[in-house]
Image 1 (cartoon, rainbow, N blue to C red):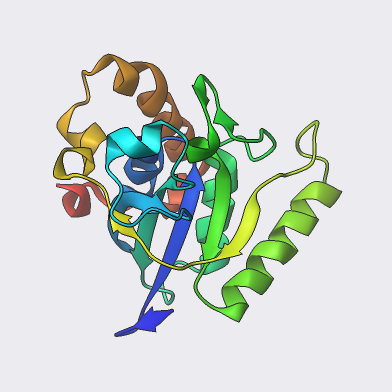
Image 2: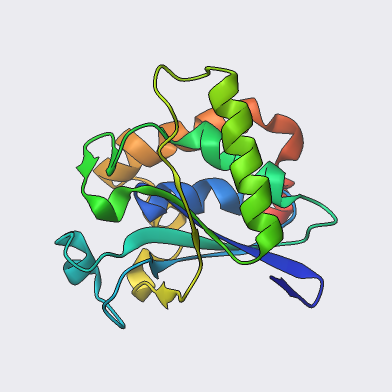
Length: 186
């Protein structure tokens, strides 16, 4: 989906705090919003989503400039920062709300996602096949305010120190040439 020259990607790969913190640092990303998608309950709360009964996944909606970073590059980062081979789980986070999913906004996004998954599976990068869902985007329900920029606002919180920070470090090491400048992050 293109809006004013920008494109939107909606991704689920475990806790949205991890994904948001990483994509905030990626050059070409204009904004990242944490929320819920893929379920049947309108306007779910975090507590409802945590039950695993709403059908929603924790997602980030990434608005980016495709002239700076492509949808494929967004997905390359996505696959590098989570385990796309575990069904309904990322580390200790277990449940359908933590599934790996790409909610595509256009036929082109669907094609790019399916092609990249096929390439990654063919390369045998992981010991198991990718289980990431590639499904049409329907609606984003924005998460509560305290979830937005959670890592940036709570870097000393135990989950952030133990889980989010290592993913951010891994991303920065692997994608050093694609980081925003420090002035953009301030």
